Image (cartoon, rainbow, N blue to C red):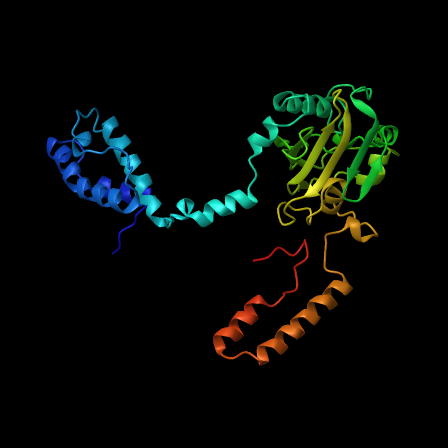
Length: 336
């Protein structure tokens, strides 16, 4: 009924052709050559070298490796028809955009004056996380931390070195969530602060363990609920001094509040929300627009409707309607 330009649709056409006879080996290139030439013309001029004779090879058990390879490449190029080509990369306007708004990270890092290189900074960050972070699996004594060390989160800190170590050791999180993993990834050096390493954390774990009775973890988590938390991605960073000590550790800045099941919350607040612990303050609950913000949005919408009354035509009226401010959804109200 219609052509299906996808690998699956192409596979169906391939299976319709004879496979085990010399006649089939001849039919394939006759059928596919025009289609390949059309794809080459429509998609790009530097398409992979293709020739019908690629399909005319000795066939073992009804298959030919050349056939499969050429068919696979053709399928990929046919599928690319679904993506609209643009040539904006070669325009002066695109170059002006790059020059004005996109920094040359490698050049900035190469010209940096910080004495410790990129690879070593990332290795030092991993050593710090393995020994001093809440997820540490090796004993840490604070020797990697600078005396003026500071720990900061979205709604916590700054904590000093002593305060951080005392807080870190007060809750045995992994006893209550024995399979929890932080899922650290995407380590990179900041080109603007060449002594700072950024990384991303997600994290997941199931509440199946029992905390020590009467401990802080027992008060926080209680009896195991069996539920699994899935955190949203969060930006974290470690900043070093020239001597290699950690000056600053930041965690928990949520990058997409609609990912996961914590209601957009990171850290302990997200975990507590998943296991049903509701905290009596706004910072520990999924974000929702405050009364003042709701009033601001409604006033903006009122002015927008007044402007629509002065629109000269329906097109302008529709444009104003589309640009009108809308009430944002809460972090636990996933948009459609």
